Amino acid sequence: LEQATRTLLEQGFGVFIESSPHPVLTVGMQETVEDAGREAAILGSLRRNEGGLERFWLSLGEAYVRGVAVDWGAVFAGTGAQRVDLPTYSFQQEHFWLESSTAEDPDTATYPADATDARFWEAVERQDVAALIAELDIDGDEALTALLPALSSWRRQGKERSTVDGWRYRITWKPAPEPAATRLDGAWLVAVPETGGAADDVVGALAEHGADVRQITVPRTHDARAQLVERIRTALADGPEVAGVLSLLTPSADEAEPIGSAAPAGVSATLALVQALGDADVAAPLWCVTRGAVSVGRSEQQADPAQAPVWGLGRVTALEHGERWGGLVDLPAQADARTLRRLVGVLAGDAAEDQVAVRSSGLFVRRLVRARLAESPAVREWRPRGTTLVTGGTGALGAHVARWLAENGAEHLILTSRRGAEAPGAAELREELTALGARVTLAACDVSDREALTALLADVPADQPLTAVVHT
Image 1 (cartoon, helix red, strand yellow):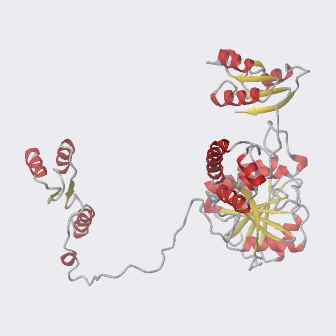
Image 2: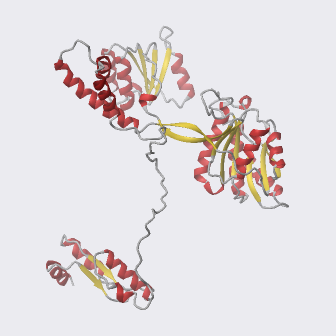
Image 3: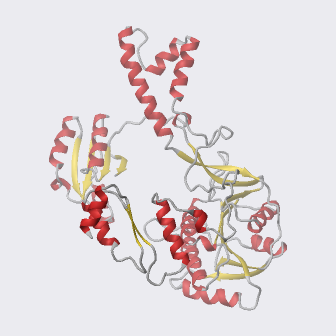
């Protein structure tokens, strides 16, 4: 078989079909083809437990896509099949990546690669010497010989800026149309905290607009999940199928616990609710309501940043349990009747938007848009002073940051790592930074150890106080 296969390959044959109830020679033939350094199609006709016409047709298809000419007229004879033209309309496509927009929406349009060119040639056309000098960053009295390297540098930096602009995005809020429907059907399970929270206005709005409200309280204990499962089943035992779940468990500013001790109680309660709904086999969409967790405009200040973690938890829930996720809705601290009616409209809608801010002025939806560097506010100039702490300071990234700090006038650098002065290259790095004029302290400190970190900060000299931390 091997000799026959090699001879056929040398004679130019590129397709080998084993006609049998089950292929037994194809593996050996494939190994021979590979050993000979050739390319060929090795195919069977039928397979064990697949001896019907459908399997044979599938083998014909496999042969066809490998370049074998198939008499399709004979294959489809008597079946009534006929050739048809492909549809002329565009096939519907779904994209799951960031797309370049058209010029209709300047916020999402791709930043053009030649934007810097446009500014340059506009200055040339206007014969604006001052603009050219500023663009090229040269002195006005420099000779023409300085122009060429300046142009080369300008061109290179322009390309880099355009590339970076293609990576930059920011979050914004866009106005959305008013909800088409404001009527709810079926049972709505509303979760409220045992203590605190303002839920009466929302619960009243749901009942007023047709919802059969089934309210449960969520305990703030370590076993809240198990207790919640029973409360959910009891609340839904004698009613219609649940149409939706509304969580009003967001924390208020006065209950946000210190960072490092635990998550705010409202966040933990929301997590317990998500888990308990799964345990109770409730597949209805879950909507989480916050108050003042997001800001939809420059004139609107965040009223309660402690609620923002609920949005992070909600995004994770949407990714892990999209089949039973509704969305996130943010209300103002004080919601009037118009705002509550819009909230009901969001819940009664088609859930096309799962991140919505409801305000008395209208609905706003969350969007990701381009953030062109040239249009961003200028960052204030900063120079290091006093003591600067760099975590992971002896690593590749930390060392790079430390050199920049030293070159820009840092007085004292504390570089932490798990091994401190014993880290590879630490001694050489200290000598390099000292030569640049900085005082350097190499400290062995695990920054996740609060006591060790506290002791390290306590040793910062009083005459060079800690003014910046770079966590690498």
